[in-house]
Image (tube, rainbow, N blue to C red):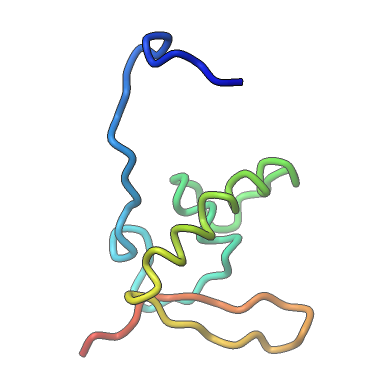
Length: 90
């Protein structure tokens, strides 16, 4: 339900963190692991399905917004997710 701005103690600018601030340059991550990292969690943190869905709602737009800084590794099989990492700029 919508709320009045005045009902919040504090309002902050809406900003996505940069990929280099979130991802290790030598590691590839699934979208599920990235969703956790964006929230300051370890990539292997166990989450209930509802929480994981909410975190994915944040992670997917982040991936799209930062696509020019990321690379993609194909999944090993059709039932596994792909992996994302920082694009090498060298």
